[in-house]
Image (cartoon, rainbow, N blue to C red):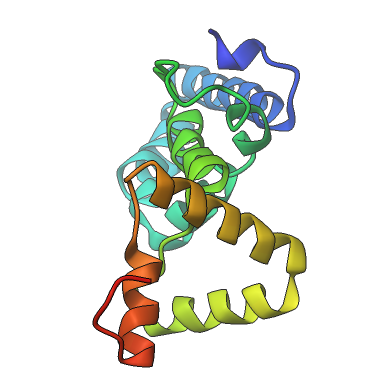
Length: 153
């Protein structure tokens, strides 16, 4: 499966970014000034910046609509970072629940669950499905802790 050949927003974005990267790479080989002042600094320092990586993470969410339709047991190998990261996002959306590692993200998740009924239903369905399959019971454990119960729910 060649994700770059898909007719989707994520695939189109990757193709356009690859074309820009190829053009700049060719320019760097032709022009020493471009290479010295633009291309080398961008590749050695620019891509390391947190602001660049945050945008990169958002780009990786664009392939999710296409990737979440691929069955979970289908092997997927990506030759580009965005579909690779997008497949992780798709697995979270399509098969599981979103993880909240810090207080701020937990509060955002609670707000979203309270405000968005469709999202709430999705989360409940996924938690129930994964609980039944034996993969997940974290939410059940949290509820037991919150209400002070020791037995199974």
